[in-house]
Length: 484
Image (cartoon, rainbow, N blue to C red; front, side, top):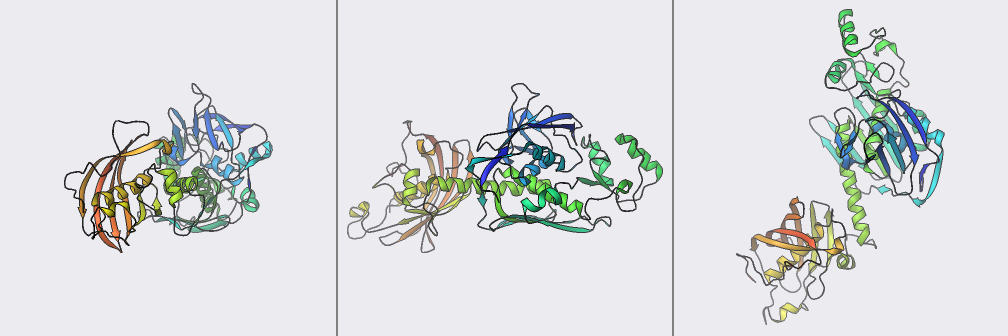
């Protein structure tokens, strides 16, 4: 796999009809600088708006993958994205004068040929690989879809499809080397549909640009001549149509016996390219489709954003530690004697966090709370819980170092057991809701696996320079809270 990022050497263009919209479009691939990523630009709209090619901008997956930002929408991007991923191109600007790329023959090969003619330019910046170091699983029981990412030191995909159709049966395929297999073995594999789907897709406003030259139509039912004529008239097909003996309309030859499965792999590759970074992972996909591909891509992109956030603060990798005390000091404004957590040991972005506080006899509050029988004040347990929760709210905040988390309310606070010197407090915070800058979390504190305190907290994220409120400091004790 390549080490450095790359783009293309010169602009290159192609034209044609869009598969689903039927729009005639011209598309130009242009070189882009390091760390630019893949972006589409609609030059037919005022201001030539751009849409980043990532899952955050996917708005429709009804029969292809559609991205949108503002009024700029681009349909059916998966084959273009598959070509870019297969050729390991990191940075490129794609200009379009319509709302859908030209479909070509329904495969990724026309885009691949176009990009190969432009040549490649190696850039100075290293590729930002997302290395999968834990199993990630997606399952859809209703559609019997399973997609899994497994750790490995390169990139490979295996796909299995089963359409319960005698013309296809069960098929599987695998790609184990982008460099050796993609261009010749997978890029030429065309999109396909079943004959029974054609009228339904057309009635839904799809496949307006589809014809027998840019899609493989699989025969899945017997039709008489009048039914064939009716379908052809409805779809505007003027050429003769026969029900092929090989299971394909007009007996068109498949490029490979398992071409449908290979095209499904192409779709998976293109949809996963919307994660926004190349992967080092083994992908196993059973019965994938665009909807499941995009849901899985969202899971992986969330994992990428989490890893990127962790790398920003935690420079030294430590077993069993997400953020050590040095990283915590970069995130939180608190300092001695009010920094009350020592490390973060688990972190799932936008979901939950687990923090640890080692309670020692040297804590300054034990001197007066209580002499001869030291007990950690309940309000400080809540404060430590709140500080842990504050780290959970990092995601989605620009310049987190310039923000403060002000707690607006604490509800359902309960203290189950006293906390004394020598205890290790483990805080588990779960994000219940997040609207703009207002967040609600549920927190629990444990010692040796026993619940010692719990509460629900509402917080507001504000600029650090603001002074209309004060961080919760233990002096403003909410109703129902007692110091212990």
